[in-house]
Length: 577
Image (cartoon, rainbow, N blue to C red; front, side, top):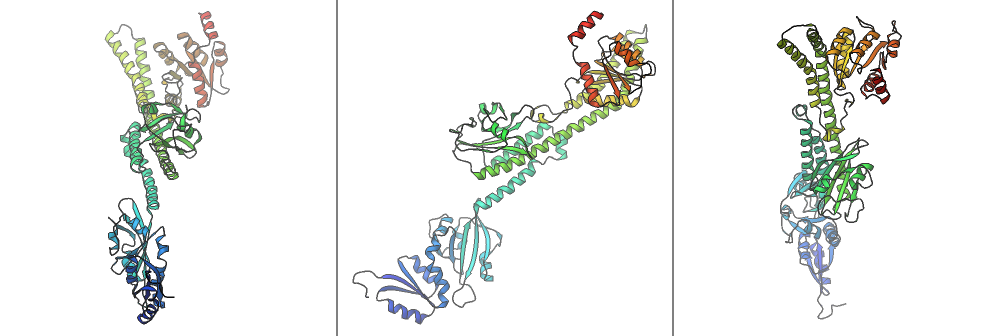
């Protein structure tokens, strides 16, 4: 049927490398169609760019590849990946709409060099010349292209052959936006590196920095990575005090003062999102702070928050909270990354705790070693000086004053050693979770240990000094009597088998010197030939230690001795006087 007069003819593109065949077909179609003959793919693409094309005809097997590309052009336009066809000079012959979007420009890209379609472009590999490689090897080549700081494209170049030529005429480029995957991977690697740096406390730092200084260093690193890596400006970290369940602030940036000073505990009720997370060990995403029943106001104008626990194995060490002025600002990806980063922080905190405990142990061990080495010589000086003072008559007062000074300074030596060890221990704050050997009832109590065995006296300095006691020793009863007359002691521990007196005589004389003095006798099991224990019990002895005794038994007996007397005991003491 002939074309009706006055009606424009539909435009057809005829593609084929056989000129005669192409001409004959075009001649038959021209009566009804506007036929444009194209012998090559690039000529066909040029015609397509002008638009208004109603159909495409391809002729011959040698045109099948080019024809196929042209026929599926409308499908390629709808692909989520960018698609572009390049000539041998790597200039754009055709592109789909997605590629135009990825190039971030509204200018025409036809005829432009592929790499110049982007403002900045850097090839990251693994193939650093993917277009050249595809042309040279006749095989597909793949690489990653970075545009700007945070945009990444995966580029795959596939050679296209025209006719029977052995050299490709074109390159079909598929470009996919992989920014999300690349940035995710980079962030994971950055979190891993951040964890290494957070825990990087060298032995030199341990020696040169106090616990408080190391905590400040850790806080500055956490803040740096939170802002630069996770890109959060509002952050609050609290640490759990295991004894009180209180959540103490470690770091707060962007929070209002009321929120920073708010007292919170690891309790799911009435302690906000932070208390809930600390109590349950589960992360909490608050998408809208205005409607969430758990949320307590933190950052000014905050409309969403994300809180994760600081977990070390199965233990909650604290909480990590970030907030945003936008509702629904945090995604599952944010939750995942914050949990990973919180795990690294927990590891760093655990390392800090171990280093703190190690330092405390080192300080304690050094102090104990010094006390053991100087304890007995100091005791000898105290005993000898006391004996001189007690047995010297008519000596110049200046001499006796000097002797008393010697006694004072000598006793101060041991107290100074103990005080140095105590001062080097971390004081409260974030180190409060470090356990201590000190027991409140034992600290600063004065104890006299009387035993003929050098090892027993040495052990007394080491063991009781560890609990904060001020210890002095004597090798026989007369020395103990001399010291008890000259100084105040909270308790005396005496062996019943001393070179100069038995246990009962020792107990009786000590109680005669000071009726309120707590006396504990020591004996081996079954050894009491003079019945010292029985007679001493009848005279008021309350505590006996049977060698070899455990440390907890010794501590228990001393704590009982240091306890205030019961009302009944006070009444008996009054009657006795």
